[in-house]
Length: 295
Image (cartoon, rainbow, N blue to C red):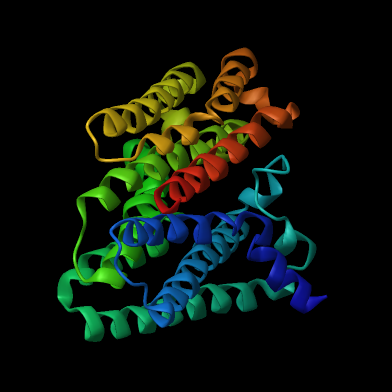
């Protein structure tokens, strides 16, 4: 039971996003016809998993300690795992797991600095800062909380992968990283809707709390339009191949999620099909964009 609590706190079903973002960064390397160092790629994947696990476990820890876990109405896509309220004696183990994952990530970062130089240092420090402050501080600042998830998975994880494989930041990697930046922001934004009241009681002040669900839904729609624009304009300008337009195939799912946001607002958690569509569009769009670069 104790091991199961620690494992559940990692939120395993959500960890698939990390390797997909690494895959996107790797795909830009392949598109440039450069060779891929498989050992460096493996470390990038491990580092991505450790980063995601660490922020999840620390989030579980702080949500439990603040009492938020007892207020949250859980859905399959929001509200945490619920592992610690069922096994509160494991709170220390979950904290140590999150810290250990961060230390592992730091050690991988040291290796990449040794191999590729200090160019990766800003990415690494920003990543560790996001992990350490996301739950306890960033969630109290609406605009930071809005863009922090996308920064982590888009520019830090996807573009960071390209850097550790090539030793410099490529223009194409920065362009494609903007897609998970926008979509992952939307992923977390919509998942915050069902938690508004519980989060408010816990002292959080993320975007839906500060500006309401209608304004948040408008931001969601804006990010969807910006995602489409980035892909289309990049293809027209020649920064991405025409095949990259296949990444637009899942976009109707984003519009479906948007309709649910406007229709149900904070009650969207009672209609999980909209949250599920939001997850699928984030994963599938990022994956298809990466595939388009290597075919």
